[in-house]
Structures are given as structure tokens and as C-alpha cells.
Image (cartoon, rainbow, N blue to C red):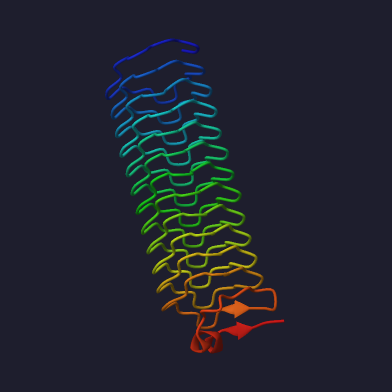
Length: 263
């Protein structure tokens, strides 16, 4: 079934596993609890669809439009979501472990509580998205845009976040332990009480970032810029810095003494 137009169709609890739906138009259709395992639906029009509770293990939706789609509690592990448009989509508590979202657009999407463990999310647009309580453990987000995201309590531990844009993001209480943030843009980010233990922040820009009570134990700050950053109560024990690191004048002597200067 390719190039079909089924607008506002009712596919509640439908079994569509292994179906080939290339280029199908399912605008405003209801796929609540549908079985989409191994479905192949590239370049499909699925904006405003209801995919609540749907399952799509290893499904393919490359270059499809899911603008404003509802994927609450949906499960799409190991799926191909490359170049998918999910602008303003609702992915609350969605399960997307090991999915490939390379070049996807999730601008303003709601990913509250979503599980994106070990996803490939290179060059993804997530600006102004809601990532509260989401899980990106071990995910690859290289060159992604997370400008202004709300990511309070999100888990980015061991994630690859080099050259990511986190400017003005709210990362209060977020877990960024052992994350690769080399060259990341964290200008004016809120990292209050964030866990940055063992994180690699070499070459990162943290100008005017709020790091009140943050844990940077063992972090690598070589070549990082912390100009005008707020380090009140931050733990810098064992954090590495070098002659290229720009530390704020407000840093305390005790904090500086707890750090390790490298060549």
C-alpha cells in the first residue's frame, strides 16, 4: 500500500507489522496501540496522527512528516527515524532506545520522560524542546542543536555531546557525568546542581553559565571558557585546567586549590 491517501483513518489496534507504506498519507489518522513493527513507511505524511501506545520495533520512517503527532507511550526501539520531522510532536514517555534520529527535527517537541538511551541523534534540531526527565544515556548527539531546551533532571551520562549547542538551556539537576562535551556551547546555560563529574568540557564555552552547586569533580576544563560563570558552591575537586582555561574572577581560592593544573 504505497502513495495511498487515508486521511483521518481509524487504525486503532491495527496489525500493520511488516507492511510497506511508502509515501502514504495518514494525516490525522488514529493509530492508537497499532502494531507497526518492521513497517517501512519512508517519505510518509503522518502529521497530526495519534500514535499513542503504538509499537514500531525496527520500523522505518525516513524523511516522513510527523509534525504535531502524538507518540505518548509509543515504543519505537531501533527504528530508522532519519530526517523525520517531529516539530511540536508529543513523545511523552516514548521508548526510542537505539533509534536513529540523524538530522531529525524535533523543534519544540515534548520528550518528557522519554527514553533515548544509545540513540544516534547527530545534527538533530531539539531547540526549545521539553526534555525534562528524559534519558539520553550513551546517546550520540554530535553537532545537535539544543538551544533553550528545558532539560531539568535529564540524564545525559556518557553521552557524546561534542560541539552541541546548549546555550540558554535549563539543565538544572541534569546528569552529564562522563559526557563528552568538547567544544560544546553552554553560554548562559543553567547548570545548577548538575552532575558533571568526569565530563570532558575541554574547549567548551560556559560564559555566563550558572553552575551553582554543580559537581565538576574530575571534569576536564582544559581550554574551556568560564568567563563570568557563577561557580558558587560548585565542587571542582580534581578538575583539570590549563593556561588556556578562562576562569571567572569570582572563583574562590579554595576551589582553585582543589583543581589540577595541567601543561
